[in-house]
Image (cartoon, rainbow, N blue to C red; front, side, top):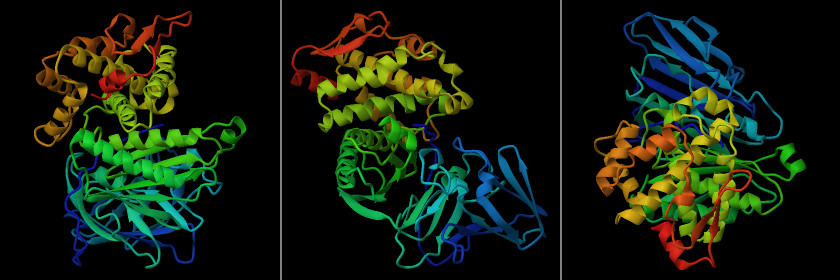
Length: 495
């Protein structure tokens, strides 16, 4: 799963009648066309005579997105050109004049929905599923910096009978006014039309679950597990989370998965939401992969969204690796995994792939945007390396202190609401662990994360009922449950 979390900070949303914002978007069906959306952008210019707008050509690993942008026109002369990763639209105007751009967004591929085009605009078969980065052209200088927050109005003009949901709060409103960073628009999600919608209550809040029909997968089971995941994660963090949350799950049809009897499951965490895709194949394995995806992406509500990092790929050992570790723990805690299944998944999904990876020992500084998004080996490295580092730390803390790594995560979350709102450095994360437990993780961090050394679990004191067999001829250690799965092992793992 390729994941890029774009940080968004939401202010108070309103559906009031006053729409006098400097930047506003109106989105509606493009006439009688069933595969197009028309966007009208209005922008109150500053005391200049020229304004530049951007639309991405390459984003989230997608390329040639300019093919989705058509029928561009304005209420004054404009110039369009493609430069690097952007379509650049330049409009000349009088100082302070209101610019109105109108353009159409359409899918540039019309075959059955495959996993490789899920980030592109999906407008077909009477429904749409689009991300903000591929929907909204943005004025270049409206946001002065990455941290700058500005007001934006977004209004959808749809038939009253058409179901509609968005990642913007309130999530059922067709008109919202939000305050946030530029990435707020880029990481937003909108869907409507022929969808199956469920409102799942979780305490005083609710989770919206939007799906399309599957042939070989029980959506009702996924809904129950989604509800269970939200409850478990909010209890783990001792945090109520957002007032509502949106999850989409759409079927994909990849011929290679049918031929090889395989499944493909992917998802992307967004602000107050995430989108998921799963191949609609026969077999029970797809259900467990969807469970994994639900727990993983929901964990990003806290790790990645609220608990922010400063250096993206170089800190994915934390935002992805620790997410992997704790989502697995929570599936164990909710009995979606048994201790034996937990250990089996540890071996097959983490230990063996990492120890056999050609990049297993590369320094952490080798991770960058290009390698992460183009190399499967580099992409999965921080997930597996971070998981095993979290396992090592959690085991050390539980064996030598009254604390666990979960205590440290809740301390990091508390700090994210106060002094570290703009994101943590590695040094700050390590300092909170040391302050919370008295244990200094810095030497181990330098060995196992920064230098890329493999952890020798054979020499460590492990939880009761768990052992490690020394590496065999392929140099891969194997975790085993010693004796029947015990309550002691379960309690140690979830503590």
